[in-house]
Length: 174
Length: 132
Figure 1: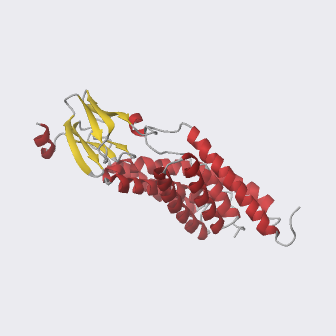
Figure 2: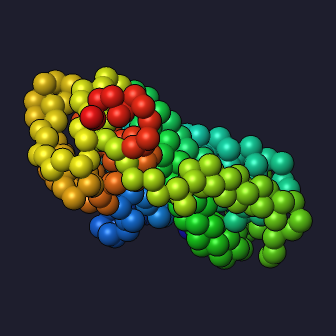
Figure 3: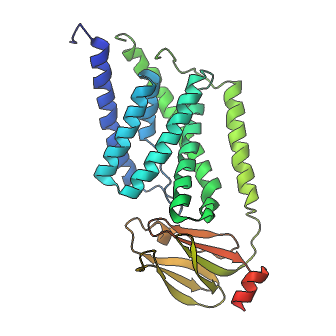
């Protein structure tokens, strides 16, 4: 099926492309789910499950590439400049934290995901505070961090199941 | 790189980190003193960091708020001692869906218009000077 000269490269590229397409669809699906507690900007973070999948199965560079291109493309398709900046800050901050935590090799995917969720919301709030030039925005900090914790745990559990199943299929060729 | 198959169960260090996070979040919640239901004295409106008005909560009012560009972007309605954002020109309408605010410290934010409305305490002398 595959080219014999560089199977892993081709396979990785194809896999990453599928992940990107799925992440974009999930970004859109997520926007359709009414999931708000009267607090702005709480989301499930479904695309993050795919970023975690890329991080665990492909590597750090691929996870960064997936995250940034996903944020850029979904902003172009469904978002605004402002929502792009929020997503980018939250996305990069949480990705850095997740990569560092994963590198220690001591933490469970669920833990990594929880920390990613919490730091994602923290990053968004920092940008929000800078944009409105008002620290009163931090009134939402506890609620947003808790939301990041819970959604991060949920996404972490989903990711663990995905990684367990996908790695089995994936390692043969790598 | 890809050999890191996820473990079946969480270990001690996971619970430790999760515990620290949850503890931190709990402390942040407690710092806001949610049991403190001091009725607010006034709603302070801030646009892009600049305070544009202070309105007493005991007087019903409909307040148009201008954004940084000088256009009326939001409408704040004060009724029965509580403030609520009743109109906003942004597409997401998050601020309009937020609850009424009446207690000290409660805040409504309209991010696209850089508008922040906060309830200040009724006992603060600075507020009293403005309100009464």
